[in-house]
Image 1 (cartoon, rainbow, N blue to C red):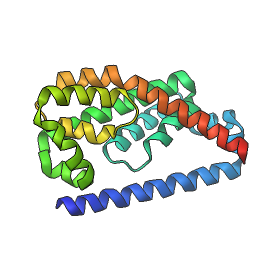
Image 2 (cartoon, helix red, strand yellow):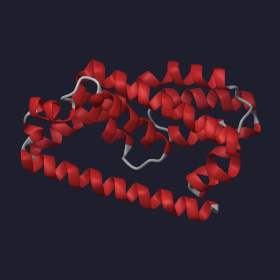
Image 3 (cartoon, helix red, strand yellow):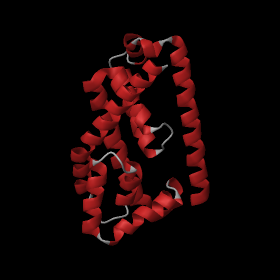
Image 4 (cartoon, helix red, strand yellow):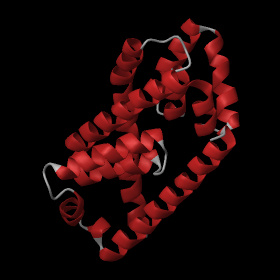
Amino acid sequence: MTAIKSRKLINILSLVGLAATISLAIYWYQLGIFNDLNHMQNLIGQTHLWGPLIFILIQIVQVIVPIIPGGVSLGAGVLIFGPLYGFLYNYIGICIGSIANFLLAKNFGQPLIKGMLSEKIYKKYTAWLDNQNRFDRLFTLAIFLPVAPDDALCMLAGLSKMSLRKFTMIILLAKPLSILVYSLGMVYGGQFLLHLL
């Protein structure tokens, strides 16, 4: 599959995922789930084992193939499982997905990455690869701060000389802050919007 066809497929999957997320949110809103947190937690997290495992799997997949907006799934984790377990399940899923992105890029290289990323993002961030020390510093900062396209950077790190061990340490130590900011931002921002309605 060419990079252009792969990119089109990813775009289509992302649009379908976004449409499904919006449809599900509207349906749940009509059911009154957003007005009753206990109802939402019972609906999705009613099993003590399968609910968290399915959620973690969804987080892993959405990091590799962005079919659901990341901020939405982060906020959902906190709403469904509470602040502590929601954060933990988000953290586990996103870290595993990030490491998978890195390994996929290490094994399949530029053809895969060009198929997964837009040309603009690819060109912008591959310039960082010219200097490994500079890339390591910028990558760590970008992962730590919740402003960069983390999934794309994890793939690009796979093109660098960074070792799996170093990459894993950066992800494990730098991810918590951005996950916390996104999770709480989505939850409290969503609650604020619901109060306006």
